[in-house]
Image (cartoon, rainbow, N blue to C red):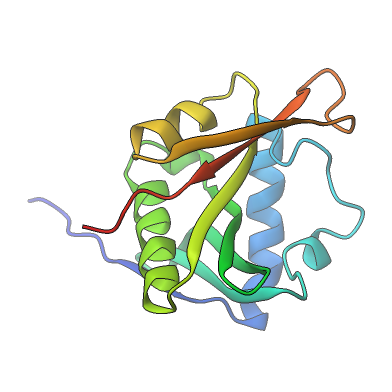
Length: 158
């Protein structure tokens, strides 16, 4: 018998934050995201300019995370997007990105994201999901991991 799973994207609550930090630690261990581990991970996951913070759950278990922040008055930025390393390639990252695109579109905001250019698959993932490279800037905080940040623009909403 095939077991049905239930996935849900919902607003992150204060009760979720510890589990989000634990999941972020797993992501960091597996893929070096974020490149530099934050001194205050819970604070890093709670930026003041956040327009919203969400989690993706599978059968009630935390499986992904997303924040959309304000960047000026007409642009929103996808940030702190990560998926449980045990659940990659299941479409959860794509679902979170689609959620962010809908969120921004409903508010009339242009949506972008920044990602370090390193060989971990993230850049390819964004390209596969239709995001367009809009520019690159050099960074000095990436150490041996990365030397550039790539800005991507969201695909047009169909």
